[in-house]
Image (cartoon, rainbow, N blue to C red):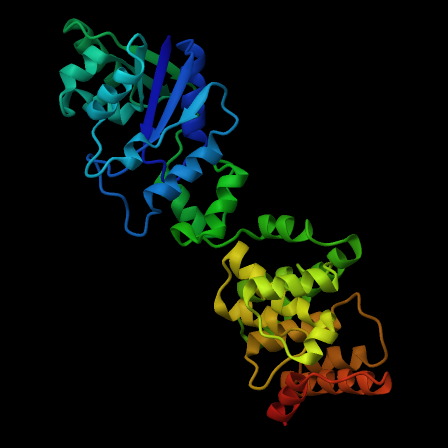
Length: 383
């Protein structure tokens, strides 16, 4: 039985790791590939703020889920203290006593392999297999492979003709809202949901995720709201990114019926008054805010803007006013007074808020419906 071992910090796991796994499995004709995220790597200190070992393990499981004959092992994550390759090899040799092991390493690791703890025993237990990237350290790899072979150490060269992928560069891109092709979709989603690496959601990805939860009519509304929110934010000096986030996510629970809305309120511990219970339509702001925080790791400011976009409340922030007005007057809206509201919103945002709130109160009064106390509080605060 031929078993490959691919270790690493996987911080995060990316396309380069997957290419190395597939190339190694194919060229070595492996029966099994064991991928092992490190627990506490002895050869380097992980950057400050890195995910926990368990989080890196989960990301690795997601990234390698479709690789044939691949097993993700927690053998090093479970181990206390620094995790040395020789300890892992000894344990695996005990589990698979008749297996032929190949230790799959990258170019940089291969060049230092002979200096690892108990390197001679590593070479006795496993054949080093170095994944050679296109135009990367080819001369140095060839020289080191020749040196090891002169000492009786077999070496396999794995041709992996892909462009080098840098984990550190990927982490920087995540902070800049880039959704890179080097990261699997589910891995990226896990990173955003858990707030790893200081990542901020890419807007194309965010729209895809939000639009899954909406019907076609609502998607048009949300797209219009996003454009309006960005324009208002630019006019009044608010964060364009936060305005965009709030607009994209403000209606993500709007499709849910009354029973589902109330169930979400129970799940998130949202306190409800009698009006809220009897008018589930106004609950979607509260449930959408909680879901946005849970799944998309939005800031408290964005969460609050989503929460109050339907009713408003006393002492609203600039971002809250922007999302409220963008939702009210986005280009797909067509009702008496909307053009006046649009013009006013770019001249005097507080006056526009008062007008919008008053229009809501007038409409509810005309229909004989109760008025949320938060709406009245918002009006009084603005006056």
